Length: 215
Image 1 (cartoon, rainbow, N blue to C red):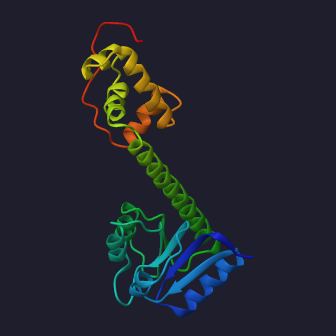
Image 2 (image 1 turned 45 degrees about the vertical axis):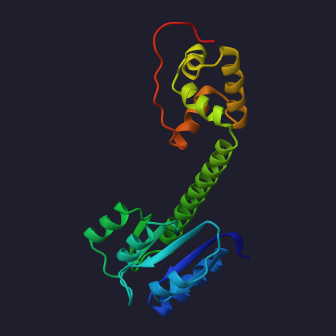
């Protein structure tokens, strides 16, 4: 029985190998789609779920390593390379550009399945991180203009009275804005808010100055 929460793409010009890999994946309950060329893969509709791309190095229309470079600019499944003509420079190049593994034919079913599971886990993690970033960006957009001014001052380590003076507001008002920022950004602590600011790449242009007590 196949599952619908992940998918594997196979790109290889050997029809018998495509069939064999498809049967292997089906036996493990993994849905797959096989293509004989890079152009077929690029033009195909792809489900928006965690996936893995099994990619042959030598293809009729484009070298697999070149395809890897082409799709690296966008979101794409982690790649497991397979080849009948493996060489160290190619494998190094593939891994350097993010490939999960580089398997030389004939490879074992166990090695391939292990690489696929690693790739699927990696894609799940990527997707989770992207979803978290989208949520963080929306929370940031929900802040008021003043709260967006308060956030970088808070994560920079300024005391409440220092941040208030920077904005020309009272310390009590600053504390209200700070509390709202923490709540809207769903930050459990100042350290968590700092992590969020780093994820959002919010510029920190101030630093804590000596003197005073933290409010």
